[in-house]
Length: 344
Ligand SMILES: NC(=O)c1ccc[n+]([C@@H]2O[C@H](COP(=O)([O-])OP(=O)(O)OC[C@H]3O[C@@H](n4cnc5c(N)ncnc54)[C@H](OP(=O)(O)O)[C@@H]3O)[C@@H](O)[C@H]2O)c1
Ligand SMILES: [Zn+2]
Image 1 (cartoon, rainbow, N blue to C red):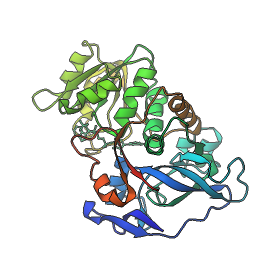
Image 2 (image 1 turned 90 degrees about the vertical axis):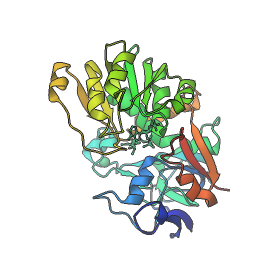
Image 3 (image 1 turned 30 degrees about the vertical axis):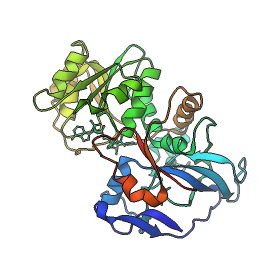
Image 4 (image 1 turned 90 degrees about the horizontal axis):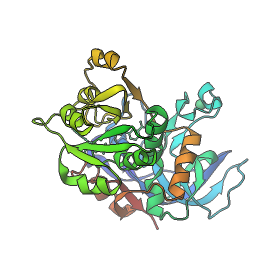
């Protein structure tokens, strides 16, 4: 079966179409015929090679997918061939302490579709049945594929880990990534005042259209911490989502209110950062990490999507044959939202 990915780790020049075996669903698993897949920044990290994460090669990329149920293994009930579904890309074992406590994202064997397994940018994908959810009727195939990874991440990051409260102020660093376009909406749904900070105003209209209350620009002459401080009416932010990393995290911390929380789920521009611990203890502030979401959180955010309270944001959608060009949109200066692939 033909899929989009790579045979060897490296840069964008390694991308292409590869052949992998058609997957066969084992006990408790469902095979889905993919109608749409979507990329995340994670696919770039997987292409480059993540230290400590061995990847089967050739490797098919894509953590997000939607399609129709094709077949299933022993013990699977409640699905019928042709049923329209989308996939939760977070895979847990269901047996460890974390899983048994309902904290699937703490699973000792937590894996992500397309990172630790073959991904969705191909014809068939096999996942545990508990990762397969009916496609909300209002969503197109492309929208269904644009939802799963970023919305579960934004939901857990703000609601559970950030403990964002109605009336609080939150800031997002970076305007156009998939997580930001989800998190702006989640922040508004949770009743917060939402400010987006980015390196230029190019995406201001797009994020305001998603509900952002304010937009600030930062650069060497207008440092992030000062821009945020002004934008918070000199109170500091209760929650700041910063997955940019090295260039921004120390300044995000300085822009926290008393009791404020910086939530991190990535490090797009580098993982190492220097922290002045005095700011943390004096403001009783914290840095909190988050990854993906628990099963209940996934269902909860999907409910908001199905009800139309949150919506998928698609930057661009192209057929699988144009996957190389589609992938190159990731990281583009004018990217807003998700990059989607469609299959017949
Ligand atoms: N742990 C998890 O479960 C999880 C889940 C999802 C994502 N992530 C991680 O979260 C991060 C965000 O992912 P994403 O898919 O939304 O997209 P992304 O493409 O990594 O988003 C990039 C964002 O970072 C900003 N940015 C990049 N380099 C920057 C720099 N040098 N200085 C300032 N801003 C910079 C961009 O801002 P502009 O818009 O201003 O250009 C853009 O908004 C990634 O690192 C990803 O791996 C983790
Ligand atoms: Zn587990």
